[in-house]
Length: 441
Image 1: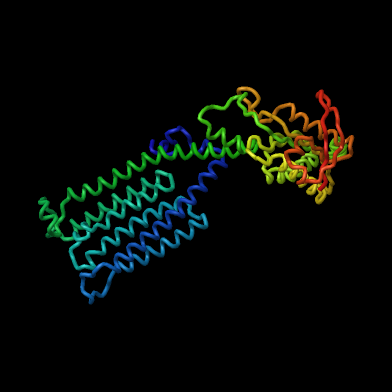
Image 2 (image 1 turned 120 degrees about the vertical axis):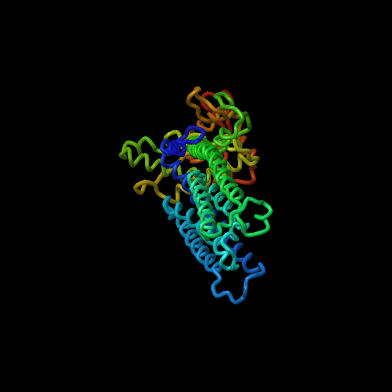
């Protein structure tokens, strides 16, 4: 029954049901937690050492053996080794369980040595406030978000303290040091079993509470990892800005939601793609196109653009939608120039030179989700978006590689780039003529 509870969170998610990549993400979080635990433990050891060094010594300076420094030295070496292994990510579960046992054991050994160092009966160490550190060691295991290690620490601590009490009451058969008088207990080395029972109950109750809390928190951790991974994966299919909106939206996003904004649209296409696809095996073709898309995407994103669609060998990018950019027209032109520079300077696939035709236009566009209830995608739509695609095709007639509409040139600033007027054209599907330009690198 306990094993079943350990495998399931309150959300009903089992580790065995999670895909390997999500489990890897959770293990990465746990590995970082182990490093944090190691540093905190090292801090506890240093604190012990400082307190021991600064505290006044009431025992004789002639004591031949002072066990506390030796125990602290052993614990320090163990903690350093554990921290080293945590950084190397070499802490298997069995070693973590051993670490829990060693932590509690060394703490209790340290407490046990007090009566030797101070020359008192064993009952002396039962009143040491150092026992409170056991709650630190139990709570530390919660940083890993695995309740089994908290449970192990609590059980080891409760059993350890029970053995410490049994040692006290059985050490001297003639005098068990047990009393029922609370005043005598506080003012002498006598043992009040009820007080020691309270300590054990407190250890177990803290353990149970932390265990329950961790079961609930682990469910939220699993849900968080799933959602963050899904959002990261979603950003590979839609613009990262849209993925972030989906993640933080206070309601379910549906088709038809969008925003209207003045937008500069860049449409890029591979020149001679049909011929290229006829003379190339499909696997080589898709690898070549992927290299092309990767190369083209870099300057677009560098200048603030957002790639909305990969349409085979074509790329549709928008500036100022969905990401705000006041210099959207100029940045779109800069992206186009950078793309052409990249294509001229490198080869793709199996030593293939690629050329691209680019059309750029600025106008009112709507960006939003389109599709069905079960399947949505983000895109930008509008007549000015279509014009950018038409300008890309018109590059064939003018033997150019970048064609820019009049409004884009005006917003970009005629003095920022070297424009060349190509003429006035009647684009299919539009009644008014469009003045077009190309830009010189």
